[in-house]
Image 1 (tube, rainbow, N blue to C red):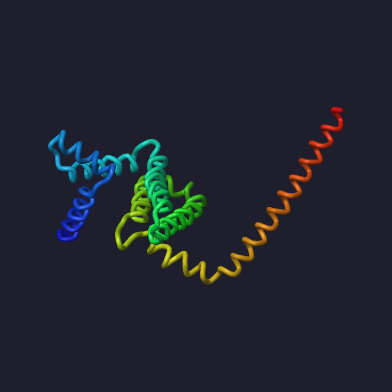
Image 2: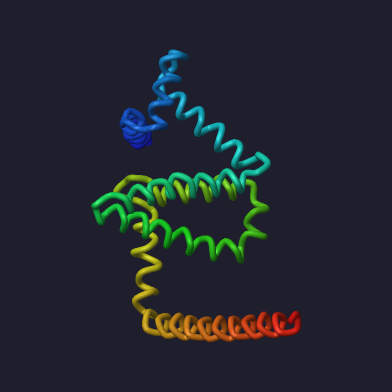
Length: 189
């Protein structure tokens, strides 16, 4: 157990010294307080964990953590020339959407558990963490992808039919709107 914690600490400390916005803030805080940035980061993680467990608005904080950085990293990936980062973030958003749908149906029950928002936040951070055992890659390849490959022809048909029906409804709605406007204009004259 001690070896695992030491590896975790060393990995976290390595990440905390990589250049970036958050690390620049931590460096300033370390300089001003004289407290190592590792301890500042661990303190922040502790405060966020307590807030996610007991705080009002824990849902907003959890969803912000799972959305803000991944959205920023996704825009950055789109603007880069590399394909690997695009795939990484598309995988994250696929898993995020998958969990959002599951959460829609289970949220009423699960949100009553005190550690729900903390557990969800840990899951989301694991899904976007820059590690080889990234959660979104694991969940996508073990759960989502096998089911997609099994049902993709049926899904393609359902999506195609839904798109055709939506296009027909939109066309009919536009025709009705056009006729209503035309009739209203002719009555005004």
